[in-house]
Image 1 (cartoon, rainbow, N blue to C red):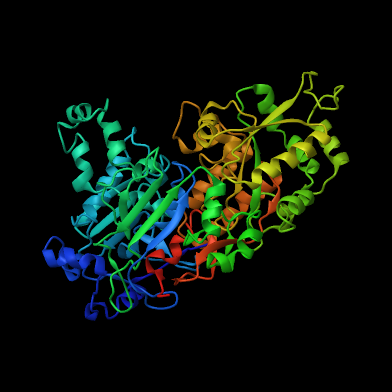
Image 2: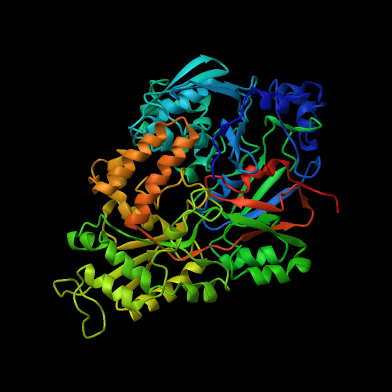
Length: 633
């Protein structure tokens, strides 16, 4: 989905209208600290022009604890979706516009190389220290360090960026080349990196600002200052990001009980310096605390929701299998179900490793006819009926029907169950004849056994899907082993190149330009061509491999797209990239997801009844959980 349009000062002024006259009320939980003089009055804690947020339903009331859950100690994405979506800019609730946030306004040069941002005057971190342009410059400086593992636009070798600090509230991103996609990058969840490192706090771990950093790191138990910095000030390692309660936040809630490897509970408490107010001048958030149970047991989390012990959640528990249970349990659990419209275009994408370290497997997996044959062996309707109770339709890795990039031929090609077409495709791919067990062999007659990696714990439906997929492919003559592994190993295998195939969900259904991982090798999630994406991004040159010509053409087009300031021209370039993906068919999809759902307690208000659901548009965060509240019973 496109954001493209930039919000100008006119909308900023509208959002600010009347803010100076607001009463600027605060949560009662802060009254004692203000009275004691340990916390300044709310008028001194807010910026000169706080961001005024219109509630979804009504002005709320203060208090309460929002209960939800994490599945295991590495489940940081839910925190990203609920707590940390506060970048320089953000998307509106309809995912159509980019609107002000920490930055109240911005200007873009005609050549799209220079982006000038104006921060709100008087912003403060949750510890009361000023948030200024110097923090932005420090974050970019630190994340430009080779050993500091941050991604996004800061480390894009194809278009380096520098920061020019004009004054405390004004700074510029200056790119070497035109950058037509940076505003979407900053408005997505990826935009959090540049606003997450306080110079005042984090510079103590950095030798440039603390000459004793290396010695102090060793004294603190770390071999290098980089390891010390990562432990104390990491955004790139997201779990560590929430393990240090001392690390300053700009979000509505700040870490109270941290997320550690053995945590059973993670809690957040309101940020007394949060810089947003409602339309009556009440400082947000309304809710005092967030309490997240940490459990590896999906059954426990499901039971918590059924018992009314979760106030709002969709992640992990809102599965197809659970939907009848949750529907029937609404009255007893005192909750309701709302609708999530997914941005994902597929329930599961099968990615064969075209960069396999075994040349014979790499050659086979790069063969389009082989992938066509696999696709024709999948009985998608059986999977839809059995696993998804009939919801969805056969679909390849292609933009969703709601997307302006939708192409029905691309979405439907090779989705027919057709064993004869599969056999013809396998012969065209050069597979040998079937052996005594009825399985195809390599051309030289050696056995062909394909291992597909999966993470059953990530999505429960994948277990049932993979069981059916294995049976279907084996019935068609492809010997399959399903390898269920943990998520850490799943990612660790990618740079090594010694894996046959992996599965994942179908990102990029609506956010086509921002998330092209299945259409071209754009980043680390392009598992089907991990070493080609390394060549493209220049991030890990030690494993990079030069791509085939059609992929290099896509990369050239995407670089043009990144540099194009005109949205219509960017769309045209993306269509050319998609045309090459359609022609070369790099990955295999199963089905278009049906709409999802969320669970919300009946007394939890200001929640949008229908939400667009994505990662880059990190639902529910764009629907402003800081303005949710608990109504009186």
